[in-house]
Length: 248
Image 1 (tube, one colour):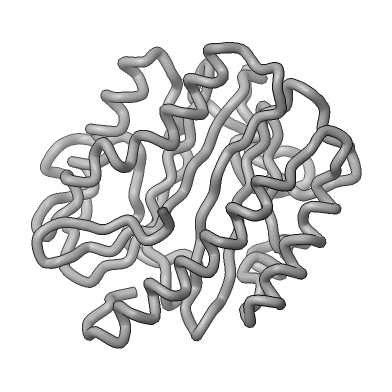
Image 2 (cartoon, rainbow, N blue to C red):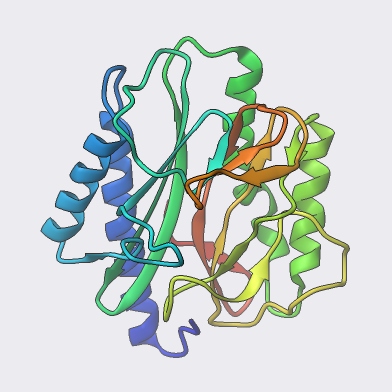
C-alpha cells in the first residue's frame, strides 16, 4: 500500500492501532494450561468486536484455518492453533492479521511462560528491540538490503541465527505485497523505500541454525535443528524523511 494522502495516512494509523490493541490484549491473556485454539477463538471475537475481519482465515493453499498463528518453541511462524495446553517454559509467537476500514493489517509478538533461560529472554528481547534500533535506516531512497544488513549484523553479533527463507513484506491493500523485506542482505541492494510505503518488518530469529522446514500440516515453519525461536512483526510507514512504526 502507498498512503498517498492524509486520509490514507489516517486510515492506516487507525487500522494498525486497532490491531495493536487486540494483540496486546491477547498477549496479556496467555497462561499455562491455555490452548492455541482457545486463544484463536478469543482473537476472532476481538476482531469482530472491533468491526474488523480476520485476514488469515482461508488464506493460501492449503487455506489457513485460523485468525491467529500460534507458533511454539521451534516453530518460527505460521503455527496452526491446536488443543495442546501451553506449559511453563514455552516461547509462543502470536501473529495476527485483520482487515479494518478496507486495510489489511499484520503484526506479531512473542511471549514467554516462565521459567525460561536468560538466553531465551535475550532472544525474545532482541527481536523486539531490533526495529527501533534500525528504524533510521528506513527512509526514502534507502534499500531493503540496507535494513537487512543492519538486522543480520545485529542478530548474528549476538550469536543468533537469522532465518533466510522468510521475509517481511508490503501490506495494506493486500496481506502480502511487494517489496520483500528480508532480515539479511547487502547494503545498496534490493528494493528502494519511498514515501507512503506501508511495510511489515518482521525479524525471525533462532537460538541455533537459521535453516527451517515446513511441517506436515503444510503451514508450520520449524527450525531444522529444533532450536527455539522468536518473531516480532510491526507495520511501518515510510515518511518524507524517515519512517514511523504504526503498531507501537
